[in-house]
Length: 305
Image (cartoon, rainbow, N blue to C red; front, top):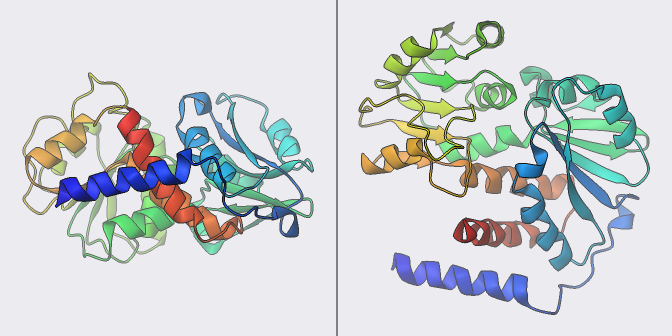
């Protein structure tokens, strides 16, 4: 059954993406006067997002293009904001290490962004930028509403902040660690302000605690390289552990491999990429079929490796 489903998905992907006839042209000028979308991050050019979005935008019949823009950590961000306010820009996705900057630079923001202090999407409208966080939507969808007795967050940047908001009200206890102890402490303060029982830990201590956690969340780049091991080390996990790995790559990460070998529930970076992209569809006023196109395109990229 799984094989038949996979074949059917591949056939649908082929039909959607390799047909010479695009879908009926979507007039985006009713909603946006620009044509360019960006991905902003220190390694944006190494991300899959342009390869995900450009075929979808073409199939939707738009004249939009999605481009990677490498913006180093110490880049003058006022210049980035100025560029995003130019009339040819529709929106920009924002990734490491600029998600907290995105929340701070926005003229308006959703309540979720205000709570988390992080954004992964800036939408331009009438000379202003509005901040959204579709990472939050993705985590909520993929983890579901199950009560978590103990969450271990490895990494304390923008992605971890989004997860904290997404899981608000579901956690009995949270352990947070980061190579930057200050970042971990700031995230603990945010958690405490939301009434969550959270504490910081050293990296080795958090790895040990992960073995008894009900949810392990990897919000670091660990796993991007083929030689990386599981983010929690080599220990066996509890039988009810859910592993959430933000990392997507041309290979299955060691964290996801280890979870699957133990028969645990998990969500990988591809799952997250698909879910957060789907959450952008209504925000960009795209046609409803965009979500199915995105799902099929993610599958095609995974198969390409």
